[in-house]
Amino acid sequence: FYFFLHLFLACLPENHYTLLKWLSSDFISILCPCNLTLAIFVQLGLCVSRASASVLNLNCCLVLLPMCRVLLAFLRGSQKVASRKTRRLLDKSKTFHVTCGVTICIFSVLHVAAHLVNALNFSENYNEDFLSLNAANYRGEVIILCLLVPGLTGVIMVLVLFLMCTASTYAIRVSNYDIFWYTHNLFFVFYMLLMLHVSGGVLKYQTNLEEHPPGCFNPNRTLRQNMTVPKVFEEPFPDYTTEPFPEDLPVPEPFVQNNFMRICSEEPKFQSHFPETWFWISGPLCLYCVERLYRYIRSNKPVTITSVISHPSNVLEVRMMKDNFKARPGQYVILHCPRVSALESHPFTLTMCPTDTKATFGVHLKVVGDWTERFRDLLLLHSNQDTEILPIFQQRRYPKLYVDGPFGSPFEESLNYEVSLCVAGGIGVTPFASVLNTLLDGWQCYKLRRLYFIWVCRDIESFRWFADLLCMLHNKLWQENRPDYINIQLYLSQTDGIQKIIGEKYQALNSRLLIGRPRWKLLFDEIAKCNRRKTIGVFCCGPNKISKILHKLSNRSNSYGTRFEYNKESFS
Image (cartoon, rainbow, N blue to C red):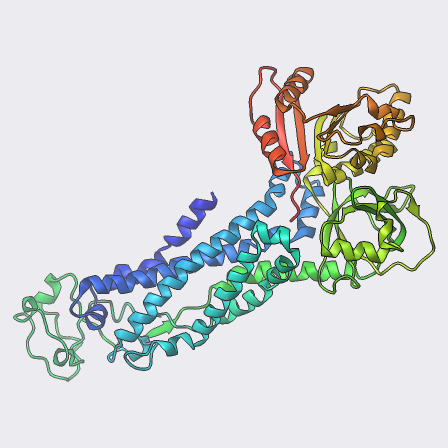
């Protein structure tokens, strides 16, 4: 649908009206009197620029919608979107945003190339008979065209778009997220320049086609002094004077017989195209600005940090409180600490959601970049305490921390399946931690009746992030005579230090600890066999390699009639 929508816009009749009507007109004979191929080339540049502009208008409109996080969270949690299949389409918001961005880059190149051809043609084929059509002031003026409002804003927009695209690559986002963050916020400059770009009015269209159709003959003009009349027209055309053509005089027979030669009553009139871009982007841009204003007002009050816990493998847990804060399991928030960065903020999945009995919520963040390192140093009393596991209860003044959210994610659906398979890789366990905490408070009110929880880590210490939570949930389900409610499988890809987890405190997890990597195909076959003719939700948050394997196995058919629906974490 997305492809055919672009094809329809690119082929709109209004984009190609000039080519269809003017190829046999007197305008082309004046602009390019000796070369019909050049004439077609001139009009092709105009058509390509108009068609690519229509596609750019659409994508500049759509690229903002996936970034309206509040709207997506409302639609995901609203009862108006009752279909699970429709809600799963919202999980593709990031993919859709990237697709629109790539489309903008491709058609921007076409648009720029077409306008370079147009600028050369407008300069070299300066029209002295129709001065209002000219963009140049004289023949050969090329550089001045680039200094007009459309040309200057176009050049700056291309530079901004180049910075945004190159900084959005995976290599730059991983190596230096700050570059991606700051360059991507140049989109506001891009849209402001786009508003100015379309107001130049370089391309024009004729407003009096009925009175002066393309290819007509105007006896009131002495065009024959500046152009050669083809021999086929020499006999039918008498020598006209400059006096007005009588209206009551019958039209000569040669004019009636010739389909493309008609008499016009007035000179052609041209007018600039109305900037349609405003219609396309004004709505989504206003919606995005209103949402950002709402998010700023909602997150204007800082949260109260209740405790900070340093876990092994450079993982920090922050627990906090905020008035009237409500969230669902699987959602995420955006943290902003002005002392770390005045403009930069980052998303983190909630590992603990507030309930009716407790208002505390928390996140786990892995220290892997400059922002998280500075944030950790501000929260901890000493930087060398990051290897300790015990909570830090010292009374101290924490830096101001602002929380924006919560926002929706695919893992909200994990409790809406009868059977769910949750696969985590390393720190990717954080979305499932909030689900496990919610089940610890009570599982009877949810549709979920069986949960397969797979957690793969490289080192044994990583399991201690949520080892206490897993043990408490296991013991609770055993006390309620529901030991089959959750199936926990822990996989350790490296064997160094395996003896550290063996102990009385984590005895329930020792029998579920396996060495190596999961055999995914056998695992899927076993789950399908135990849950015949059921729909199982597959949720993954981890490396792309695991994600691709699970996605492929979910789409594979089986002999048990079991259907797997794949979901993947993706911050928008």
